[in-house]
Length: 126
Image (cartoon, rainbow, N blue to C red; front, side, top):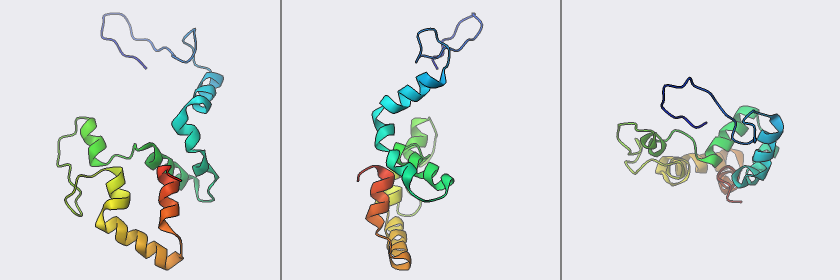
């Protein structure tokens, strides 16, 4: 939605149609034709609860509110990871942080799940 400041009353226009009116078809076609969404379709095929699929999709889209994403939204605070003092990004929080590495190793030992498979799935690198 585009926002312009003026004295004219507010209105919304759907940019995916010529007449500016929302249609499910226009939204669906935009989803199908956009690259990042289509590359994340594998997430929806995993047999886990829906809320986990949604979280995995958020990780894949890199919209989790990590400190680097908060700073982009004009958040004022320390950008460092509270576990290791490195800059907090999604990549860092889920892969590079020593605590994340320990947690993935624990999952690997406890459930005999290969962590790299899960990470590739979430981050779209597989």
